[in-house]
Length: 362
Ligand SMILES: N[C@@H](CCC(=O)N[C@@H](CS)C(=O)NCC(=O)O)C(=O)O
Image 1 (spheres, rainbow, N blue to C red):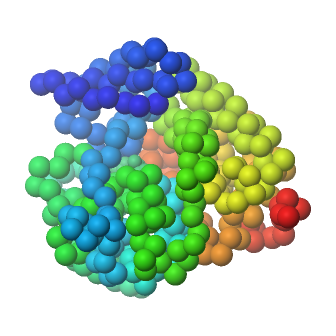
Image 2: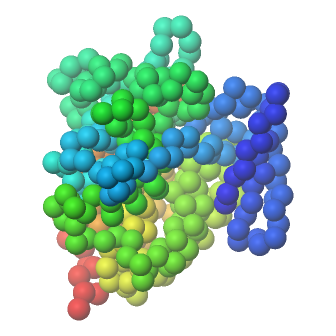
């Protein structure tokens, strides 16, 4: 789905174009009264029909191998701000680790639970700990001494009115946000840094698979990656029911593909797998309960469950999964869904246990 924004004086209009129904351009038009000052949090991204609608990212620059570009590849110049809780940020961290970019690109994780970002308003968002020891896994901002991700966006642009999301790819030299859209950051990490990446030969978006990866990404994004959020943030039964239907159709389709081959595009790991993994690893621990995705658990899909363990055990991947941050974030940061912030104890799955996926390797 592609969303087009029209900014009028009083409201934002979004026309949603569903590429699956070719030709039906104005599938739906939503009047965004509540978004008239732009969404400040995912919890506000709601259409009048009670469906969750994600707004587009704002900073869309690219790091390039071209030395004359605005953001050229340079070891040590860029920094990735993440939350271990966030699936979109985690896919960037996964690339950073599995491509061997740790020496070239530094990274910092924020605290898992959203807090007030300013005394002067009510905004709740990502904040840094005050010290290295306050929150294991999270660190104070080493570059700008910022207290929150919001502060970074405000440093980068005085006129920014969008959401204060992670990931943020930061340029230390120009002191600005290069890009805050994970689907673009992972593509840069895959190719642009190959001159300095320790694992440059790993190509997760090879030219012969690009069309297939793009096609798979689209229905997995709609049905699963964003689909779980549509289940969880729906404010009416109809949009929830529709999101659940799409989610389980997509999961069933993945199960079928993965019962015949090791990965989504055959027998090599690709971008499509990393994008699916970050949602599936959160599924039974969080989405099944918190987002009401409980028609079937991941553990009840034999191929998908073993596949998640397989990807988790790919060198570098397990270090990108901090289940404590994941659980504390979701259950602790959405009071409209879980008002008392109680964190369920289970199921505590061991993703490092043996899997059966090697049978597909030649
Ligand atoms: N399009 C963005 C989405 C990132 C995103 O939604 N991040 C969430 C965390 S999972 C966030 O930071 N939300 C802050 C908020 O909603 O205020 C991407 O893929 O990079």
